[in-house]
Amino acid sequence: MAHAAVYLITGGKDSGKTAYIRALHGERGGGDGYACPKVFANGMHAGYDVLNLRTGATVPLARSKNALPPGWDGRLERGMYSFSETGLAFIDSILEGLAARPSARVFIDEIGSLDLARARFRALFGALIPGCGELYASVRMNRVSEFVEAFGVTDYSLTELNVPEAGGERL
Image (tube, rainbow, N blue to C red; front, side):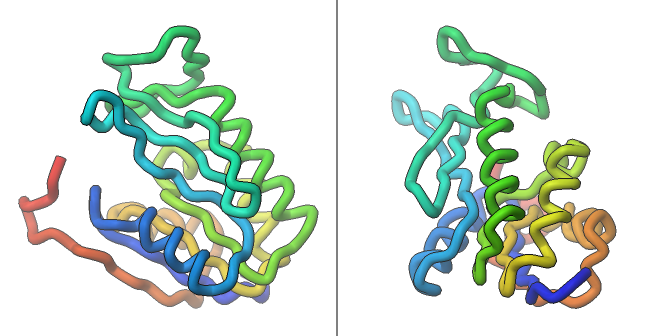
């Protein structure tokens, strides 16, 4: 792992990782990367979007498999979600941009099992690490060791958010 100071934000489901990443982005005076805010429909959690933190553009990323919108371009499924081809391509394009134009601060939200399984994500993410000064990444608690191993991270700071007690994690 070259150069970047790595800050991992972790916690369980609904622990506030995305809100924390967005707040850090604002507090640190910007930077580049993406967040994955929740999307609600009729008061119910329907999925996630990808928000480009530099431009403010958003693209649908994941929707509940039992309530897919018309014309949904599902590419992969994980758990109860279908992931959009367009949303995954948007993440890849943001990562490509980060590798091409290094940023002092990079914010990457919700690196999970799907990302770690995608060779394209691993290659793009691995390529951007040497070019950034500070890397803030949110990773589910149960994926931290997998993240560290996948990207050869040996030195990092870990912030745990709202960690529920054993058996108390909200679904």
